[in-house]
Length: 255
Image (cartoon, rainbow, N blue to C red; front, side, top):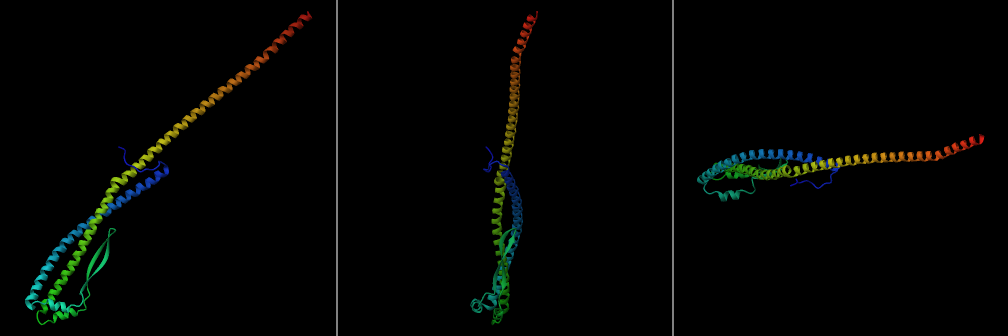
């Protein structure tokens, strides 16, 4: 079965175009391969960070639950009091975009926006103020770890999808595009070589025909010259006979 190639007319211009395309495809394959390797390395590093962040999150929530148990033991159920004291969120999430080997991934960061009044209110409760403040700081750390884990998980999913897309492109270039262009270049070269051989054979036949025609014309001209010489010699022979006869008669008369 013939190898796949592009449907192009075999000319030198198309040969140059195909060579440029082949060079570009090889360069693109190399760059995409490097990109896939870089994304894979970053993905592995993210995986380690995700595992560490999950362990930290487990520890943070474990400490938070212990702190909440201490609050309930010291101050009882403070859910209603806390909800009444809170008027706005003390932490908000800021989003920025990071570029990893040409892939844009979001980065989340928890920012403290509280004006400090909420801490004073919680601290000024009738009892258990210290435990409530401790629980608040513990859960704030848990929120930071949770935001970090969200960043890592989101980056992991985006990078994983980018690696799949890049790998498909690399495989397509390696198994389809580059072989097809290379086969097209070889096809155009073979056709041009065949055209050159045909042109050489045609020129050789033309030269042989010219030589034969020149030889034929030379032979024809030589034949014509020989024929003319024969005619001239034929015309000159009777005049010589007459002169001979006339001479003989004159001699007869003299005697």
